[in-house]
Length: 104
Image (cartoon, rainbow, N blue to C red):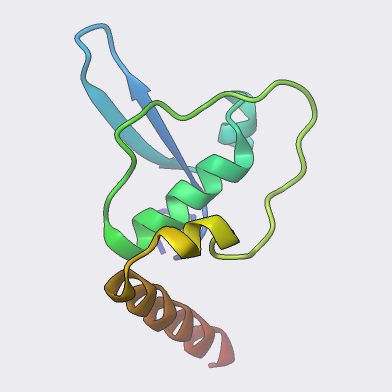
């Protein structure tokens, strides 16, 4: 658990400051909605961060209007197709780890 955000959950908020430095924060859904972030992209970025420890080198996109809470699927089909074999193994091992914690 990271603060009050369960492992594997949350939203990544990447922003760029006036000095062109990028900062990334793990935030809850309410904070992501307050900042009007694209919830699906921000949520996928957070899941990727939990697995790899890396965040995208870009600002988190904004979304206008009402949004649905993202699905619990770890990655879209396109994301899975773009991963190399080692990344796919890391994702699978992480999912197994999360499932074993839920089963306890």
